[in-house]
Structures are given as C-alpha cells and as structure tokens.
Image (cartoon, rainbow, N blue to C red; front, side, top):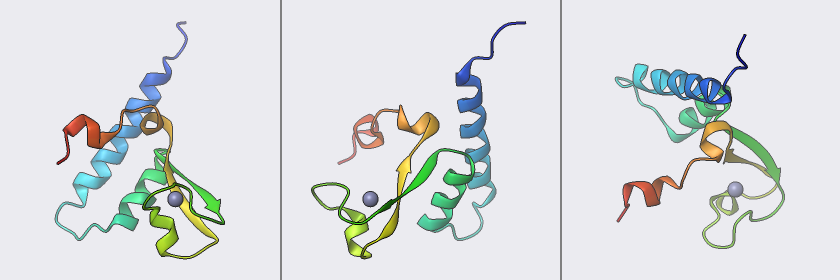
Length: 89
Ligand SMILES: [Zn+2]
C-alpha cells in the first residue's frame, strides 16, 4: 500500500470548504460565517491574543483584547498571499 499524500487531505479540505461556501450562495454569508467554516475544515485556527498581532492595521485591535485571532492553517498556511496572487489593486 502506498503512503497517503498529505496533499490529498488538503485538497479534500479545500473542496469541502468551497462546497460549503458555494452552497450558501443564495444566503447572506458574513465574514464570521466564512471563518467558522474555515475552522471547521482545518483551513483556519484561532489563537487567543492579548495585544496587536501584526504591526500595521491589526484587525484584532478594533475589537479589544484578549480576543481570538483567526489565522490561516492547513493548506492555506502554505499558500501564497492571495492579494499578491490575484494582483489586488
Ligand atoms: Zn489578529
């Protein structure tokens, strides 16, 4: 039996997440819903922070501390920055 390629699990997680997002296309999907789905599929994780977690424009700082900061995990943690990839203006 061949060892399982870890990328298979990453692709499965991304597919499951994408399907859940697409299934909500007729509803109102808020940012917090997307975060919850991403955590569910292992694509984000929460880290409890007691101060700003990045130097400029830390979103967490808007909500006060301590709070749960959502960070990329699994397949997303290794992915290139989406903004660079898409060429965001
Ligand atoms: Zn944060």
